Image (cartoon, rainbow, N blue to C red; front, top):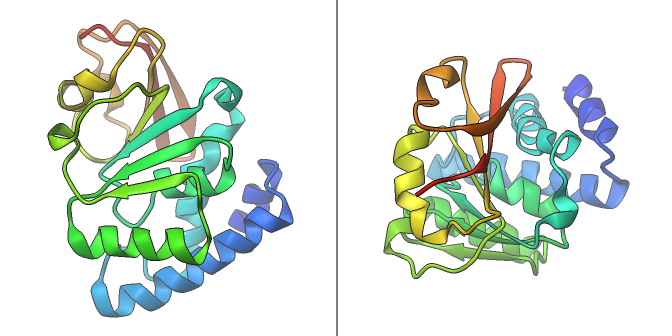
Length: 195
């Protein structure tokens, strides 16, 4: 566990944010025993997932991002963790499974996250608004995800998708992208989306 705690701090996370990660971890462990909102069961697994969620701080310029949405937020990976680390960015988290969205509401309240809105619905049922960044982890293929969020995409919107080692099979018809690998994670950053 210590190795992930150190890796998180190496991303420039200060003590105040780290305290929020600690509270998130203890609440997830407690809530998960009753409601099973995530497959992660240990503190080490949670810190590994926190690190995975916020690793893009290393390569993505968040200064240009004011509004972001996270699709299928689950227990908060990655959108909620990015929101904790980036209080100046407004995040809308979409999670249609009620026990998971209830957990996200709990974390928002306990951590006093004024930059987070939790919507208990599917993104395609939501009214569109302009966003700078769309994130999602392990939800569906890039092509399907792009079709689900097409109405949110404007000229400068970027997609940040957390993928596994088969990411290259999803790149058909996607032109302007980077793939950043860290450990077993492949971050697919789509810089221009044609919808």
